[in-house]
Length: 94
Image (cartoon, rainbow, N blue to C red; front, side, top):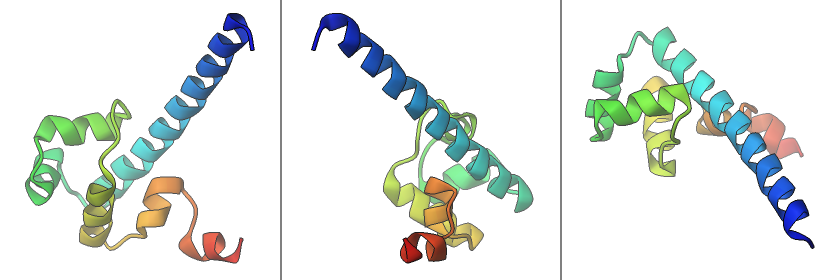
């Protein structure tokens, strides 16, 4: 594989990763807004900085997996949906 095709592959993966990260951020932001939870309050639950939560909500970074579970539990939402956008039942059926 040539250097050009490796670079194109990396750019395609980066674009896909960016889209997935932004979609997850939108779900997280929507869930927090619906529950009327601020970034500061969520940060307190998760023992992280408010900036971390703000970055997650904007899709700049992604929360660690354990944070997904704690957020989902606190908001009473499906952690699989939060991560993927798919309902757990649909995932289990596939």
